[in-house]
Length: 500
Image (cartoon, rainbow, N blue to C red; front, side):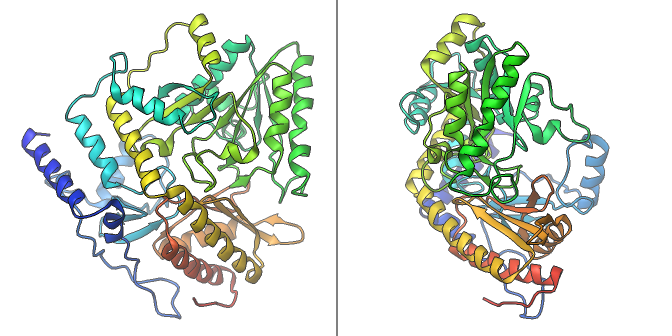
């Protein structure tokens, strides 16, 4: 990019930021797609009225969608899957909670927990652009941004979690967190959770049942013990008042298994809410029961907040706090940079010092670089300025209330669960037997796509529609979602319609 083009970008971003507050900028592109006729299940696709688009990064000659698809199939590994393949969605820009395809058709994004404060938030974009024009280098040079962000970040955690390692992805954060446990305890064995997901590197996969239990996965390794999924809808224990302790008590059996094989407990790793497992909210007392057992055995406890942290639960910045526990190590990522690749491991000074005394210096070329730190600081600023934690609580409560009403109407919905802007709708063939219904869930997902609403399916049986949108998702979006979700269910299963 030439300096002239760069200066043009700077001027455009500056003009955009001067038009109003970040909320006003987001509001400019918040017009929902026009409603369909009452008897139609698919709305008319029309170009967006949003005029904030820039073509500065557009190639002189654009490829057609078919040409792009052909090139990708030829040069990109097949393991890198596409949504809606073989007719994938081509997204060319995004703003707030909306994404736009090559024809400028607007889609409501209900699954992108990475663009946490909204796609392309102007303050976050500007922070990254400004710092990139000044300096970007590794973190072995003294940087005010690095030190300031570490201070700001640790201030959101309990006092004992006061030390940070900066990384670039959730997988990297998991790798380092596991190594901290191994070094601290001179141990190798870990306890993980059924359907948990912690990354795609080798060590991360060994503690990710979601990956290793796959038909093409590596299988459960000898040094791994696996806890049952603490699902009070489908699991062994279903009383919300007692299930947490009962599910958590399994940890003591698994610790005994580790000791019987002549090994020691390195640690426990678990998501504070399970995403790939099907939007599972942990029952009360679950983590406290596990943490007590693991600490008694000399192990450390890792809370994985990569997908759910930074206020998504609506009660505070970190979901583990809802369980009344303080982990030894916390991994964070995805929303941390609002789409910019940055992550971290937050731990105690004692654990960090043990690593320092027993391993070579930790060096990560891009971890904690000035641009990542500038972006991270901007994300923290926006979360506070726009009161997004409280917004997640209020908006999520409304969404949950409306989904529960749909459950009363549609027998195919077996369960609705959630906390803040993290929700799941489980589809079943029969409410009594609770037989999972993947076909219905997938068909509804496809119908929602036809109505320019993006959702996804998850869970062991792929029968759960997950909702974890950008935190700018608002009341109008809830009403729009519920309206079309009701229609799409009716289209798939033949239930009577309710119009809103």
